[in-house]
Image 1 (cartoon, rainbow, N blue to C red):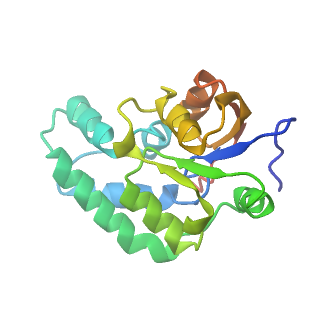
Image 2: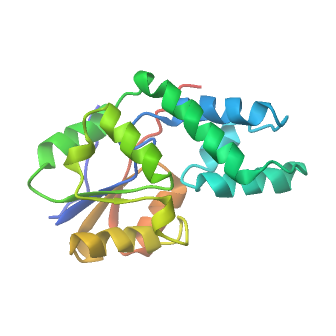
Length: 196
């Protein structure tokens, strides 16, 4: 199945990472379950996908509020990241997006714009041999307002030296599409690779 792009010429491609470039969402969900188990925290799969694109620390804070828990945010984030790293050998690329990366590499500059940590993004891309394809990485610690705010996409465009209206965004979440639209960028929706 191919992923059709909107019409027009684009000067840069901006990609979300998890669920867009890498089929990592099922692995992230397993890592979340493992990290939250010891605290007796529930994180239903439908909520996990609905919150796609939110920074990890924000998710822990929201789960604490929602369930009246006092999980230490930094500890849960660190444990979840460690469990995810252990699952990396199972990681695969999203084929339809990978085809566009191969096709447009060296024709237009690429950026990753992710709500994940830089460590998570670089290890995921490195595991698939794709890290060197991206000119810019904008990760959770690089901006203050998460998607659907356009800040992260605008930062990536600025770092690439490309006007926002000349960028094409690849995204798998509603929050990401909203952020791209708010940034004045065209976008293409990547179907979620969800297996459940």
